[in-house]
Image (cartoon, rainbow, N blue to C red; front, side, top):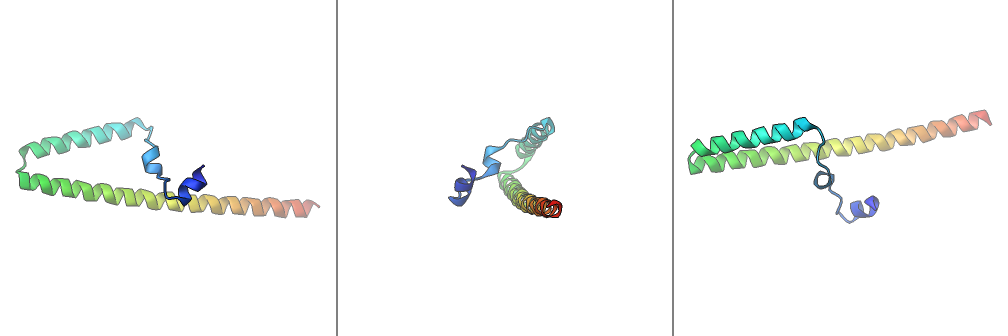
Length: 95
């Protein structure tokens, strides 16, 4: 049950979903290959810096996606509330 999982802190859509867009997989693969090529020519110290940069980028992207998710969920809930209000209003108007 999603609601219970959310309440218990066990609901993490980013762990459950994998984007189905083929471009997603292609871009991830290309970025990984580019990072690997770059690591081959960098010194160990610069490799560590690159790893840290990539970690920070990925973390920022996760935070950004979380913000989008929260906003979209809130907007969807507001839309549902407005639709229910309008249906109730139309039902009272017809009566």
